[in-house]
Length: 231
Image (cartoon, rainbow, N blue to C red; front, top):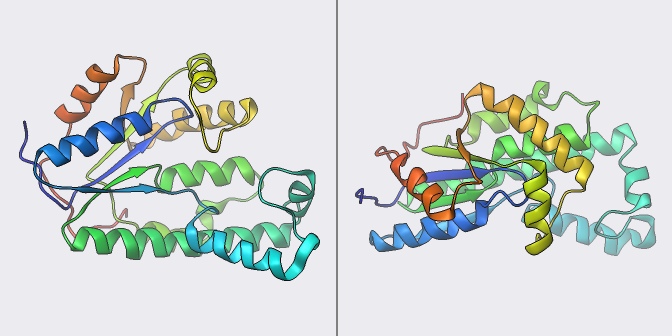
């Protein structure tokens, strides 16, 4: 086994059913066996803690003028407005600056390792699917987010087919499942963005233990350096 101590940042990406949670659980146990603990972070732009609190507060103030949480026609109509889209995205990005640029960096500075279920590039895919008419990567706010977000020591993209994703989702609970259409869009975007080299790509149809062994074999020796950024 490799000598793993605190201060690692590891991110997992992939469509529903790709096995991110399973591999994170195994990696958590692996870190524990090495005498260190790891923080778990699930993040999704627009659904971070502070933003969710702000949305709940706004609903209490506005009452039925604002849609209830979850997918609804009222919510879709509201988010079709350009001004609402830009406000929603701005708040979502600002809260991610807090999560990635402050919270994650603070954990790492204290020597904690962080295991991420989804990271900044997954959020970029989310935004492209939800708001296809907006080139979010050209926004100054997005560039600031990229600048302050620490780069993972390792990013793993777990790839499976859409058919396998659908099969697995039928037998496993997914708290925020994609519709089949969005899952297909996400699958295409992952295939496009992986060419940029953000991830080490794994075939997630392999047996769980074999996949985990491959991930451990790719585990970097270098821990996080606080001055690093994604740029």
